[in-house]
Image (tube, helix red, strand yellow):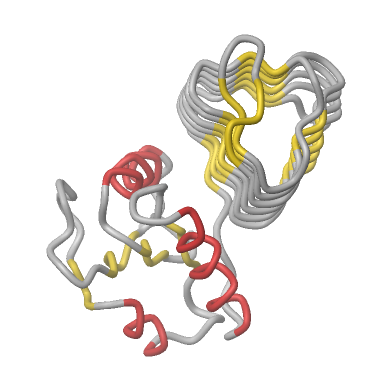
Length: 211
């Protein structure tokens, strides 16, 4: 029997399905998933109710896994994290066994690193951040809290990403660039200049399209 602390998976959509796969790979016991409707495509795990059911468990006896992706609103994932942190719960950091991580990096609480991702030496990754499938994060990048680096995105060396930013699928951010907090880099964009806070950029080279 596993002696790892059991987890509750918050949310039952596609992102949660991928996380459940990692939990199974790592032999981490899962109590169940919280979802108002039936969880989509999740097998071998019960739906135990909405998020309030978590309060039936002591913060000392479980860990949480934030299963919310980008469906709906970008803010919802961060709201769930903040809500349960205030109530004393901790979020488990998950790393897919196929990810390649330098031993000389620092990961915040609740970080999720998906299959095939690479994180190189000297990187700092903040709380509740997702490094998605096959994303590449090169040396000395500093990534804030509540950030989502989408599948196949490339961050060259020394990139800085502010809190609650999003870098879309297949986007490239060249070395030394800063992406501001709450900003969005569209899928496939190539970012060659710093991006301010609270904007959306797209294109090759990337330009601001929304403030």
